[in-house]
Length: 326
Image (cartoon, rainbow, N blue to C red; front, top):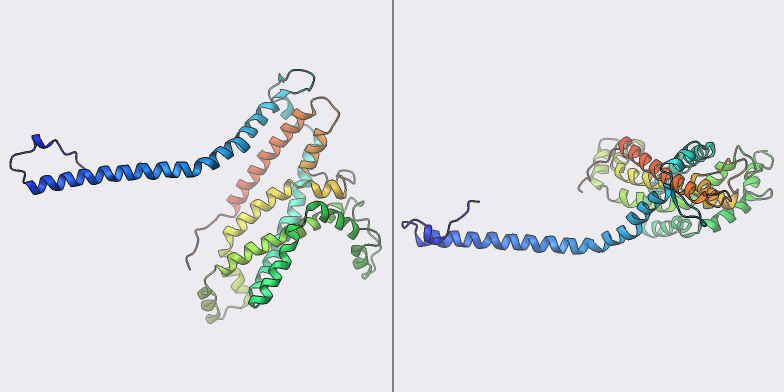
């Protein structure tokens, strides 16, 4: 838009109509700029509370933790700057790497199993009538409201010598299994309540996403003679890709940070076979050795980096797509 000079510099031949049109154009430009400014101020005011809360409860604690991890902290002496020493101590600790392997193995058990069960249940609920679907949705959501402490204690009873788990394997002629004391099965035994606690929410999220898929796609597939497997493979799964990305990232993040279940059920045993990263960090913090606080802070921040790296890998491996309009 060209700049309009002052009226006294306008040529004499410029008509009154043209002058009025240019004045109206300038007036609209000023009004548009004022409206844009007010819109920006309104947007900033709306996001300000969240930015302030994020700064107070996330950014500042994270920055303070990074600062503390570079100091040798003692309750009896002033903090001393040591740089990256504690990060080196953590990275050279074999138990830290062992806990990461256990955490990744636990995630590899919990996340795929939970997604598979959730997908099957969501597909089944979608075929039911409204009443039955509502009842089943409430049923599958029940584990999500159960506290991890309660679930851990319930499954401890399930894994007893005379518990339900040994009763089931007894039908196949297998003797009583020491589920929580056998190093070869202890982690899998802890993973079962982890799957049970998380599959309900995943089921409802997948069900909502499946109901959002246009029915015309399935009608076209049916007319083309596609069976149930082909419909699932070529229509449902591709359109659920974004949901799988979300559930995979959140599932890995939550499962890799699990510590209540192994803490209550096995205390990290037997022989550290259920020692997850967060349990290792908690045990390091409770250690009576000097400067345990700095060591555990460094370990927690390294775990934060690991979680971020895994999330990036998942986003790269399962690329998201734009939503499909119905």
